[in-house]
Length: 111
Image 1 (cartoon, rainbow, N blue to C red):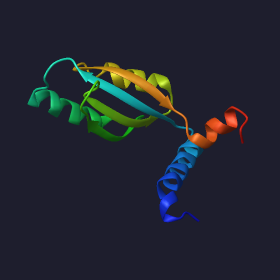
Image 2: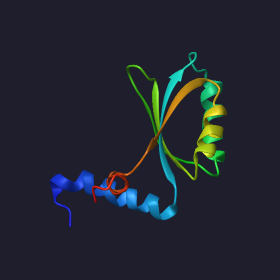
Image 3: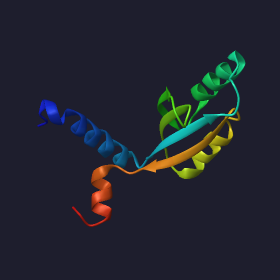
Image 4: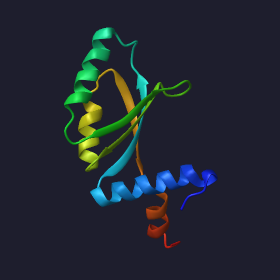
């Protein structure tokens, strides 16, 4: 059982275990705009996101600083994310593979 102060960690752990059961990878995509997006660009991206089959985009956050947006997504493999990134021409991306904490600890022999 999680206490209120542990709630965020417990939620992350439960979510991570769900991803592992599905054999999906979690990705964090850092995006920089190549130019100011137009309304047509935004509409095109919205349409593209709705048509995705292999990738589930959990959230997109516009940010201040080095990157203009951060995308949290899950996919079956790196190839699916690579195709996703190449289909959005208005941004350049840096993609990180996120490993759930417990799985990482197991992988390095700490659990």
